[in-house]
Image 1 (tube, rainbow, N blue to C red):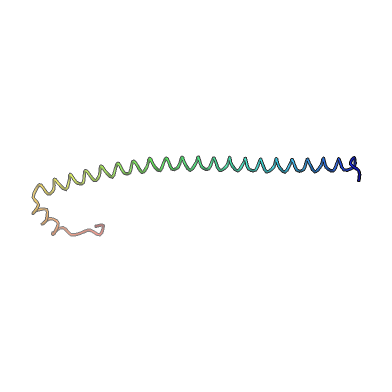
Image 2: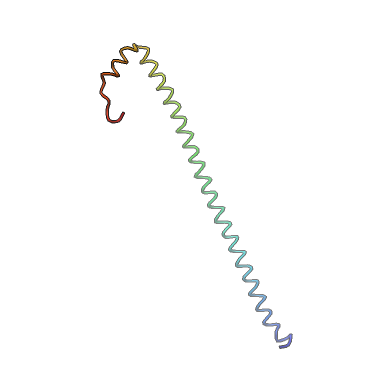
Length: 95
């Protein structure tokens, strides 16, 4: 086989090699895009969850303050009556 005869075969092999390189480059770029989109979606979800957690913590703090105030009010009325009420009131199944 002479050089002139091998030239078309080498051209075909070079084209095939270039096509393979382009294919893998496109695959890697596509995979990177998919992972980037997934990371952005997860970050958005984490931000929403963080906001929800902040709201829950805020509400819990307000409830704890209100509960403390109510307990203080109840015990300031008459602690002995409060103790009697606790002893005579039947516990519900929820307690």
